[in-house]
Length: 412
Image (cartoon, rainbow, N blue to C red; front, side, top):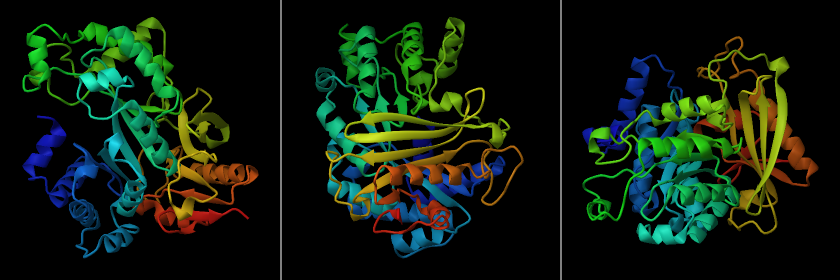
């Protein structure tokens, strides 16, 4: 009954029909559709047959392009200058499916971001809930994805069987030791009648947190989220009528924000600081470089912030150390990697400008120039970018060239 699943079912899970329908719906409400982030979610993407995966993505691009192609490469080249360009391609998979071959395959498809269900950083909890993977596999998968330049979204689930409010608080702290996700989805466990956990609840072996307990938990941990991470969600789209017991409020994010306001606390994550439709004076923006370490990679979150600490734009620059996982990617040898460039503000069509908008004001170019300067100073021979298909032209115009699976620029 989730909206995304219902749309898929309505279109018999046909990728072309689903993408076409979403474009029509966005256009109907006046939303620009020239820049599309395409999320392919709901299950373990990597478990599907490779020929099905390739066909599925090809048909997604065909829908964006408005023409049919015979090969994925052809569809991607058309999309570089199409009316609806893919500025991001996201898939969802499991930690135990990530290896060097999978990294190369994901890049071949055009993937730029990967969502991983970490759920917990306690092997006992993972085993009790029959997740089928370990914390160590999650750490290794995230390290490999980061070394290959992918943007990383982790799912974290409080109230799993065997967890407590206090253990969840401790578990959340561990996210920022080695994993350091770029984005986070907090998915509180929800008790459904058709889940095996329902039998545990009936026997009295499991008790869902109340709404009040969840609000208290998340309002507390949200203040600890680093400024480089974006919290995409704090609850899933499962309709409240499906939930047997525990929190049934789909407005949990608003409830948490109200509680934090009452406490006088704030969250400094990317989502809570982005400028949105706020007018921006570029001359008054401050440039910051937040440095942190994730595994064997030195990360630079380079940002332009307003005087009142709102986020106008940022760039994620990764500098892999000698002990970073080997990706086998020729393009990444001795390279610093731009994993993301994002400028906030009202979504404008390609080439369009608007006075006071952060988009199309040169912030993206300025961030890339800063990354080049930093990478060169630190001794890297080249700068690679994990460009989405529809953003290739943007980087090619800024001196990057086609590599095998990335765009690269020599740092002479």
